[in-house]
Image (cartoon, rainbow, N blue to C red; front, side, top):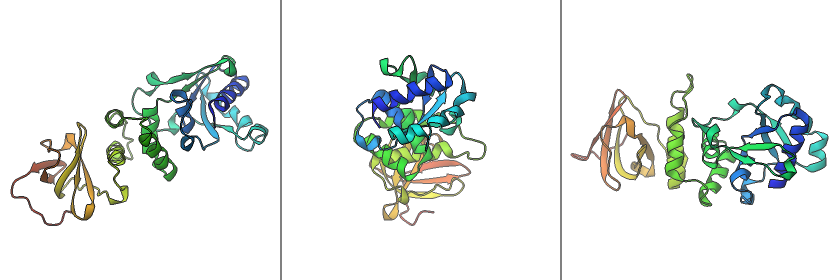
Length: 254
Protein backbone atom coordinates (compact mmCIF):
# COMPACT_ATOMS: atom_id res chain seq x y z
CA UNK A 1 0.00 0.00 0.00
CA UNK A 2 1.24 3.48 -0.89
CA UNK A 3 -0.03 6.95 0.00
CA UNK A 4 -1.25 7.31 -3.59
CA UNK A 5 -3.30 4.09 -3.21
CA UNK A 6 -4.94 5.48 -0.08
CA UNK A 7 -5.75 8.72 -1.89
CA UNK A 8 -7.31 6.74 -4.76
CA UNK A 9 -9.49 4.77 -2.35
CA UNK A 10 -10.62 7.95 -0.62
CA UNK A 11 -11.60 9.49 -3.96
CA UNK A 12 -13.54 6.37 -4.93
CA UNK A 13 -15.23 6.20 -1.51
CA UNK A 14 -16.35 9.81 -1.86
CA UNK A 15 -17.87 9.11 -5.24
CA UNK A 16 -19.85 6.18 -3.83
CA UNK A 17 -21.12 7.56 -0.51
CA UNK A 18 -21.16 11.25 -1.44
CA UNK A 19 -19.33 12.11 1.77
CA UNK A 20 -16.22 14.27 1.97
CA UNK A 21 -14.69 12.83 5.15
CA UNK A 22 -13.68 9.26 5.94
CA UNK A 23 -12.12 7.91 9.12
CA UNK A 24 -9.08 5.73 8.43
CA UNK A 25 -8.79 3.45 11.47
CA UNK A 26 -6.63 0.48 10.50
CA UNK A 27 -2.99 -0.18 9.66
CA UNK A 28 -2.89 2.20 6.72
CA UNK A 29 -3.72 5.14 8.98
CA UNK A 30 0.06 5.32 9.47
CA UNK A 31 0.22 6.94 6.01
CA UNK A 32 -1.33 10.07 7.50
CA UNK A 33 1.64 11.03 9.64
CA UNK A 34 4.20 8.98 7.73
CA UNK A 35 3.51 8.98 3.97
CA UNK A 36 6.82 7.16 3.46
CA UNK A 37 6.31 4.63 6.27
CA UNK A 38 8.50 1.48 6.32
CA UNK A 39 7.38 -1.27 3.97
CA UNK A 40 6.87 -3.61 6.95
CA UNK A 41 3.86 -1.48 7.94
CA UNK A 42 2.32 -1.34 4.48
CA UNK A 43 1.87 -4.99 3.56
CA UNK A 44 -1.92 -4.93 4.07
CA UNK A 45 -3.86 -4.06 0.94
CA UNK A 46 -7.09 -3.10 2.73
CA UNK A 47 -8.03 0.26 4.21
CA UNK A 48 -10.50 0.33 7.11
CA UNK A 49 -12.91 3.18 6.40
CA UNK A 50 -15.92 4.81 8.04
CA UNK A 51 -18.00 7.50 6.33
CA UNK A 52 -17.68 10.14 9.05
CA UNK A 53 -20.80 12.16 8.29
CA UNK A 54 -22.88 9.32 6.86
CA UNK A 55 -21.85 6.26 8.88
CA UNK A 56 -25.08 4.49 7.99
CA UNK A 57 -23.90 4.43 4.35
CA UNK A 58 -20.46 3.01 5.07
CA UNK A 59 -21.54 -0.48 3.98
CA UNK A 60 -21.90 0.86 0.43
CA UNK A 61 -18.10 0.75 0.30
CA UNK A 62 -18.35 -3.01 -0.20
CA UNK A 63 -18.65 -2.11 -3.88
CA UNK A 64 -14.90 -1.33 -3.73
CA UNK A 65 -14.28 -3.96 -1.07
CA UNK A 66 -12.60 -7.34 -1.02
CA UNK A 67 -13.13 -9.43 -4.19
CA UNK A 68 -14.81 -6.49 -5.94
CA UNK A 69 -13.96 -5.46 -9.48
CA UNK A 70 -12.04 -2.55 -7.96
CA UNK A 71 -9.96 -4.96 -5.88
CA UNK A 72 -9.24 -7.22 -8.85
CA UNK A 73 -8.26 -4.25 -10.99
CA UNK A 74 -6.04 -2.33 -8.58
CA UNK A 75 -4.96 -4.91 -5.99
CA UNK A 76 -6.18 -2.94 -2.94
CA UNK A 77 -9.63 -2.34 -1.48
CA UNK A 78 -11.78 -0.70 1.18
CA UNK A 79 -12.97 -2.50 4.30
CA UNK A 80 -16.10 -0.77 5.63
CA UNK A 81 -16.16 -0.87 9.44
CA UNK A 82 -17.68 1.05 12.35
CA UNK A 83 -16.00 3.33 14.89
CA UNK A 84 -16.54 0.67 17.55
CA UNK A 85 -14.35 -1.83 15.70
CA UNK A 86 -11.17 -0.41 17.23
CA UNK A 87 -10.38 0.06 20.93
CA UNK A 88 -9.07 3.61 21.18
CA UNK A 89 -7.90 6.09 23.83
CA UNK A 90 -10.11 8.92 24.96
CA UNK A 91 -9.98 11.98 22.71
CA UNK A 92 -8.67 10.18 19.63
CA UNK A 93 -10.84 12.23 17.28
CA UNK A 94 -9.08 15.42 18.35
CA UNK A 95 -5.77 13.98 17.15
CA UNK A 96 -6.78 12.80 13.67
CA UNK A 97 -4.39 13.62 10.82
CA UNK A 98 -5.78 14.86 7.52
CA UNK A 99 -4.95 13.33 4.15
CA UNK A 100 -6.14 15.65 1.42
CA UNK A 101 -4.62 16.27 -2.00
CA UNK A 102 -5.67 16.94 -5.58
CA UNK A 103 -5.79 13.15 -5.99
CA UNK A 104 -8.54 12.82 -3.34
CA UNK A 105 -10.82 15.18 -5.30
CA UNK A 106 -12.08 17.11 -2.29
CA UNK A 107 -12.30 14.08 0.00
CA UNK A 108 -10.35 14.07 3.27
CA UNK A 109 -9.06 10.97 5.01
CA UNK A 110 -8.96 11.37 8.79
CA UNK A 111 -6.16 9.08 9.88
CA UNK A 112 -5.46 7.92 13.42
CA UNK A 113 -2.51 9.53 15.15
CA UNK A 114 0.31 6.94 15.35
CA UNK A 115 0.06 6.70 19.15
CA UNK A 116 -3.69 6.04 18.99
CA UNK A 117 -3.08 3.46 16.27
CA UNK A 118 -0.37 1.88 18.41
CA UNK A 119 -2.71 1.54 21.40
CA UNK A 120 -5.44 0.05 19.21
CA UNK A 121 -3.00 -2.52 17.84
CA UNK A 122 -1.76 -3.43 21.32
CA UNK A 123 -5.37 -3.81 22.47
CA UNK A 124 -6.13 -6.21 19.60
CA UNK A 125 -2.81 -8.04 20.09
CA UNK A 126 -3.07 -10.50 17.26
CA UNK A 127 0.26 -11.84 15.95
CA UNK A 128 0.17 -9.40 13.02
CA UNK A 129 -0.56 -6.52 15.41
CA UNK A 130 2.42 -7.44 17.61
CA UNK A 131 4.71 -7.45 14.57
CA UNK A 132 3.29 -4.10 13.49
CA UNK A 133 3.83 -2.28 16.78
CA UNK A 134 7.34 -3.69 17.14
CA UNK A 135 8.21 -2.09 13.82
CA UNK A 136 6.72 1.21 15.02
CA UNK A 137 8.92 1.07 18.12
CA UNK A 138 12.03 0.09 16.14
CA UNK A 139 11.60 3.08 13.83
CA UNK A 140 10.96 5.55 16.65
CA UNK A 141 7.45 6.34 15.47
CA UNK A 142 5.95 6.21 18.98
CA UNK A 143 7.16 7.10 22.46
CA UNK A 144 6.72 4.92 25.52
CA UNK A 145 5.51 7.64 27.90
CA UNK A 146 2.94 9.00 25.44
CA UNK A 147 1.68 5.52 24.60
CA UNK A 148 1.24 4.71 28.30
CA UNK A 149 -0.47 8.04 28.94
CA UNK A 150 -3.03 7.35 26.23
CA UNK A 151 -3.45 3.69 27.16
CA UNK A 152 -4.48 4.73 30.66
CA UNK A 153 -7.50 6.54 29.16
CA UNK A 154 -8.94 3.46 27.43
CA UNK A 155 -12.32 2.59 28.93
CA UNK A 156 -12.81 -0.87 30.39
CA UNK A 157 -15.94 -2.60 29.06
CA UNK A 158 -18.24 -4.14 31.66
CA UNK A 159 -17.24 -7.65 30.60
CA UNK A 160 -13.48 -6.96 30.74
CA UNK A 161 -12.57 -4.70 33.63
CA UNK A 162 -8.84 -5.42 33.32
CA UNK A 163 -8.49 -4.46 29.66
CA UNK A 164 -6.70 -1.17 30.36
CA UNK A 165 -4.28 -2.86 32.76
CA UNK A 166 -3.43 -5.49 30.14
CA UNK A 167 -2.77 -2.86 27.49
CA UNK A 168 -0.45 -0.97 29.87
CA UNK A 169 1.42 -4.17 30.73
CA UNK A 170 1.81 -5.07 27.07
CA UNK A 171 3.12 -1.62 26.13
CA UNK A 172 5.66 -1.63 28.96
CA UNK A 173 6.82 -5.09 27.97
CA UNK A 174 7.09 -4.21 24.29
CA UNK A 175 9.28 -1.19 24.94
CA UNK A 176 11.45 -3.22 27.30
CA UNK A 177 11.75 -6.05 24.80
CA UNK A 178 10.06 -8.44 27.26
CA UNK A 179 8.80 -11.77 25.97
CA UNK A 180 5.09 -11.55 26.74
CA UNK A 181 4.90 -15.31 27.25
CA UNK A 182 6.98 -14.80 30.44
CA UNK A 183 4.65 -12.25 32.02
CA UNK A 184 2.77 -13.31 35.13
CA UNK A 185 -0.78 -12.25 35.90
CA UNK A 186 -0.84 -10.57 39.30
CA UNK A 187 -2.98 -12.06 42.05
CA UNK A 188 -4.37 -8.86 43.57
CA UNK A 189 -5.96 -10.71 46.48
CA UNK A 190 -2.98 -12.50 48.02
CA UNK A 191 -0.06 -12.41 45.57
CA UNK A 192 3.52 -11.92 46.79
CA UNK A 193 6.32 -11.03 44.36
CA UNK A 194 10.04 -10.57 45.00
CA UNK A 195 12.60 -9.31 42.53
CA UNK A 196 14.41 -6.39 40.94
CA UNK A 197 12.55 -3.44 39.44
CA UNK A 198 13.66 -3.28 35.80
CA UNK A 199 11.44 -0.43 34.59
CA UNK A 200 9.32 2.23 36.25
CA UNK A 201 7.07 5.05 35.01
CA UNK A 202 4.31 7.17 36.46
CA UNK A 203 1.89 4.44 35.37
CA UNK A 204 3.49 1.06 35.97
CA UNK A 205 6.47 -0.67 37.60
CA UNK A 206 7.96 -3.72 35.92
CA UNK A 207 9.52 -6.35 38.21
CA UNK A 208 11.60 -9.38 37.24
CA UNK A 209 10.97 -12.34 39.52
CA UNK A 210 12.37 -15.88 39.45
CA UNK A 211 13.26 -17.72 36.22
CA UNK A 212 13.18 -14.49 34.19
CA UNK A 213 9.45 -14.02 34.60
CA UNK A 214 8.02 -10.51 34.77
CA UNK A 215 5.11 -8.88 36.60
CA UNK A 216 3.67 -5.42 36.04
CA UNK A 217 2.42 -3.41 39.02
CA UNK A 218 0.02 -0.56 38.36
CA UNK A 219 1.27 2.53 40.20
CA UNK A 220 -2.26 3.36 41.35
CA UNK A 221 -2.53 0.02 43.16
CA UNK A 222 0.71 -0.01 45.18
CA UNK A 223 1.44 2.08 48.26
CA UNK A 224 4.88 3.35 47.20
CA UNK A 225 6.84 3.84 44.02
CA UNK A 226 9.74 1.40 43.92
CA UNK A 227 13.13 2.56 42.67
CA UNK A 228 14.67 1.33 39.47
CA UNK A 229 17.30 -1.37 39.99
CA UNK A 230 16.39 -2.19 43.60
CA UNK A 231 14.97 -5.48 44.86
CA UNK A 232 11.60 -5.42 46.59
CA UNK A 233 8.88 -7.66 47.87
CA UNK A 234 5.44 -6.44 46.81
CA UNK A 235 2.60 -8.17 48.58
CA UNK A 236 -1.08 -7.79 47.70
CA UNK A 237 -3.99 -7.84 50.09
CA UNK A 238 -7.50 -7.36 48.75
CA UNK A 239 -6.50 -5.38 45.70
CA UNK A 240 -3.79 -3.23 47.29
CA UNK A 241 -0.05 -3.82 46.92
CA UNK A 242 2.41 -3.09 49.73
CA UNK A 243 6.05 -2.45 48.82
CA UNK A 244 8.88 -3.54 51.11
CA UNK A 245 12.68 -3.72 50.69
CA UNK A 246 13.27 -5.10 54.20
CA UNK A 247 13.44 -8.76 55.20
CA UNK A 248 13.28 -9.73 51.55
CA UNK A 249 11.92 -13.20 51.07
CA UNK A 250 13.57 -14.88 48.10
CA UNK A 251 11.16 -17.78 48.01
CA UNK A 252 8.91 -18.49 45.02
CA UNK A 253 6.21 -16.00 44.05
CA UNK A 254 2.59 -16.89 43.58
